[in-house]
Length: 244
Ligand code: ZN
Image (tube, rainbow, N blue to C red):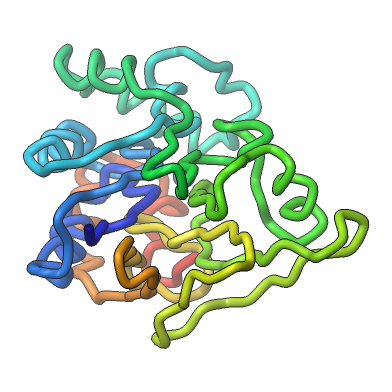
């Protein structure tokens, strides 16, 4: 099976559509790692579009925040504002869909899917090796997909648990899934933060055992215009052009 692995769409419909167009014919199913909503202007549309595909999806912190399932006091002011705006927009069908999302899934006995980390499914950011290495103890499968940081990265488990794991920023060359256990972050569709403004996604081929990273340009100003119209803070739409 070929899976389109995506995360952190954040209600950016234009970016999501660009990814689907770019990946057309390359996948049989979508695996979505959470944060469908929050920050962007099209929360209902993004969820509805995802649901029109054969897919699975897990909950992210923003999906919970818009349902008031977690405290938004720790969000930065812009994120809080976007959360409150999103709460007003969501239709009941989308709300109950988000409400029923699991926080972890295991597929094919080989792939664990969480938004944050295996240790703290919804909240923890795996930003660097010192956080990644202890997390290898918290899942049983060879591979784990995470989102949440909005930056593509691969962590490879260290042979000894007191050593630091390897981390690398992937390029266009497909990664061969072999003996080494990996934590893989495909990056963000709707709000990349690795200095590359293009939407990020990955294609997992479970038979060939490869994972390929992809980037695709989308019409950033279209999303920005929608956000301006809704009077979103300028920081929120400005950042999209810079990928941070
Ligand atoms: Zn996110």
